[in-house]
Length: 540
Image (cartoon, rainbow, N blue to C red):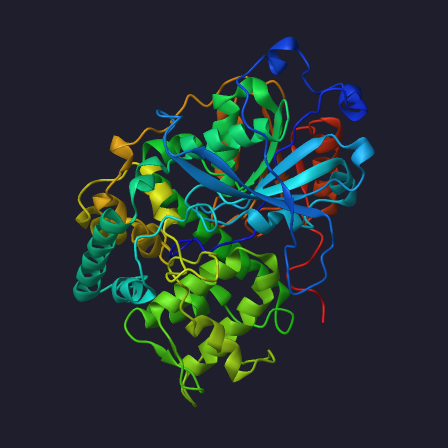
């Protein structure tokens, strides 16, 4: 999704009441006042057709697909249309069906189409709701916004960018490539680039809600999906049945100051990294392969070494500052990746030290030379899903949304200047994050010219919004979740003691709260701190 934001697990759900449903009638906490069901403009229904999510396997017979037309420009609703790709997993108990649960995995630019197949929600939710995944406008199957016509054109630009540029030559070449990137977007992206802000995604979502026949929306948004959910809650407060937002952005900061938001985002990665290193040292080797000696000192020694020279691995691959930083960031997204990350760090540390050189540890962990290969793998800048017949297989929706939502300076040298300051307070991720968005300085449809929803964020919704935050979420740090709960007009925060981006599906206690919230409309009690089911470093 970006240099620092790889496409990570995150899910969004939208749930709606069906008039006359026995289950809906018994859900007393849900607002059923006349205002909540006020007459609204009719839209064409979704034309579902049966489909198989994985044609290589037998058709389970429970899925439908559709492409739903929405206006390209909502100022001209009868004009040009674009198609939103949707997939539905039908409720397993139609007689007790409550409504639809829309899913969005975040990004921006994450494909939500296959999220209809997710197992993050329990069987009771699957029995009572149609699970609906969709690709937002400009993403994957939904009129993907493309800045290049061929992969060769994209590579010629993207391969000149350095993820963590340090030298003047690296910085200059990266900024020049970013300018060429936005020039390509101006040339190739077409009129959709003017209409990619989150306000349009939310309008599409509300139209889909009406198109499936739901009177109110329930939505579980993950990562960037939390901005979709919070924007919906404030644009359509009376249409909120149940909104779950997990891995939260700070919507007010994000929509008013892109640079400051990114600075604080880098700080979130530092907090998660520091906690990982502390827990690794507490576990010790061999439970944590990097756990012998001073984990913080060892990590910093590697990072500082990589600022001036790469580490050559026994197999010949090289770990650079950019691959190291991007892969560490990626691993912090998932608790399941932390133990493998520790092995990679240990193997790289050992490769960095020539035979006989002094080290900060006497190795006790059982690691192989190729464990370090992970940190030598470059992450694709625009990692997106696209149909197999697309010549340019990525799409460019990540920046298309961010550059319209987040206000940035119009001088790209500002990004190079703030990198110096940011890396003093965030030594691993500050410079990395600073070079996430220089393209927004010259973006052809920037935030300052775009129609955006930037608040207010405190509308009183018809039902309570459920906000979920991990204490050590790297990509959206915990204080963002706290701010989200405070900024919204009717929300409750549930916290999880975990190093991971997003929490639904990782804690049975949390999923029990999610199920009761979705099925019964019972909001969780505030102030709860839950634990994940799995340990980071299980006993060996």
